[in-house]
Length: 133
Image (cartoon, rainbow, N blue to C red; front, side):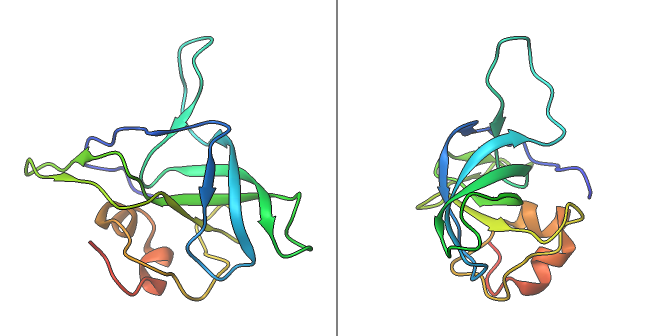
């Protein structure tokens, strides 16, 4: 996992419901925690593009429901700034469910675009992605 060069605004707080954009069996996940983020005491953790999260599956196949899975945020509605000054915002929030904490995706097809920052940081996700913005 590499560091992100962009200034990512963390727009998805803990306990947020995020739809998935892959065919892993999960439809909607709830963010439980953000891996690797430290905050001020009392502040709620928040995730942004490219962040590794632990999430609980709320909607999806019966064998997936009520399980805690690792996931990566691949799109967010809130704009974020790239090093060249451009600001990028997507139409929706989306996440990709992983097999393990190393970044291997569980699904084989991703619907919609994936941010360039995610592709740089997580090469296994970039291999499966059809469109990178």
